[in-house]
Amino acid sequence: MPVVDASVVVDWVAPDADPQGSPIRLRETLASAGEPILAPRLLLEEVGNALLTGCRRGRWDGPEADRAFDALRRMPVQLRDDARTLDRAWELSRRYDNHPVYDMMYVALAEQLGEVLYTANDQLRRRLVLLDFVVAP
Image (cartoon, rainbow, N blue to C red):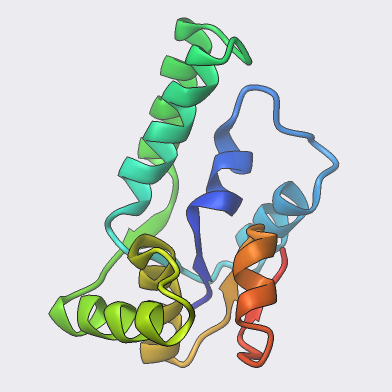
């Protein structure tokens, strides 16, 4: 049951996502394996915010963002986390140069579950290079 972060899921739903990009290939691989995909609950807010940012920056228009948000809501991603996830995310953030807690929520969830975390966030992967369960899509 892999964990995915917002940097991956944005590319699953964004109107201008590269259909040949590694996040799309990962989605297809995970779908064909039939495994549940996991993320913390904040995934919806983070991806939704990225879609709104795309509108503000003129990358896509409102109706495109609406369709992408609808696709996000239909994604077969199981949302789960708890107070322990937040506490561990805080510890990781403090350990790794006060990196944002919202990024570390994904790391903490994957760590708790003993699963891989797929992230397209290069900065996060570089920062956590010693954590072998944090990988690119």
